[in-house]
Length: 259
Ligand SMILES: Cc1cc2nc3c(=O)[nH]c(=O)nc-3n(C[C@H](O)[C@H](O)[C@H](O)COP(=O)(O)O)c2cc1C
Image 1 (tube, protein in one colour):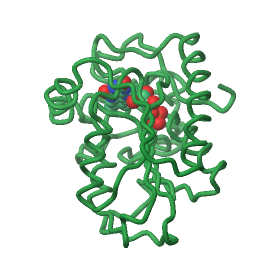
Image 2: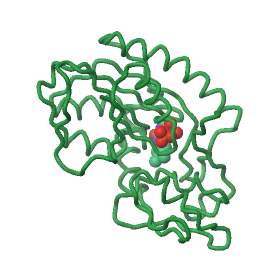
Image 3: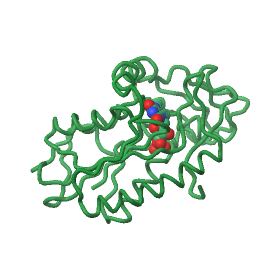
Image 4: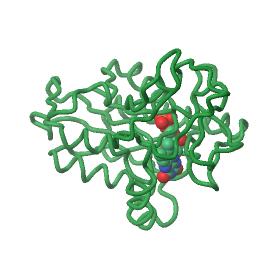
């Protein structure tokens, strides 16, 4: 079974390839009930966790999901993680390992893929150039093929991670600050003149935090579920969604099939 989370499609693209190659079932974490969860697994079945890095940590929804997991005979399963990031993951895999250990799951193989950047919520952050997006996807494809072989063979000890510099400072100090103060839907607003009321933003939100389908202007719930993933911003066909003034004149990105 493969549990995955994805906002702009990078991780979905990778998780689907693993599922196709292994025939393992793909489960989108937000589709599961918000309560204790005991998946029905075969004896020794592979368990995969695929998700993007958010603020040099696993996204909050992934951590909360793992805490609700109840795996029978956890130590008999082969467990692996695929983490996508725009640049570096710092201690994300380490944090994941700790979360999994708390529910009795070992982590046998880890891999990170550098994929197109999706975070645009700070003044100095923007999407990659089109050439860089293409280059990253080509490189990620090669690495993913290698990792799929590792997973199919249930190899233990596989680790290929883009940890980068200052992992402790990034994941602990900056990461905690990021999750505490910068993960919020408060700055999102829509330019009603440019908004087509197409509903694409609400459909793209992985945590269903936006009220507003076709024919409606989007409204964010402000109920603490938003992960500031910018899926709404990136999917808007007219760039009508802004995050304060921090996204003015910035690019948009989401993974498209033809990429
Ligand atoms: C809220 C948020 C925080 C992010 N933080 C990081 C980060 O700390 N390091 C990094 O390299 N990329 C970061 N990124 C970029 C994503 O991890 C990267 O683009 C990922 O492949 C997106 O996957 P998805 O399309 O499946 O959502 C962040 C993106 C978002 C939306």
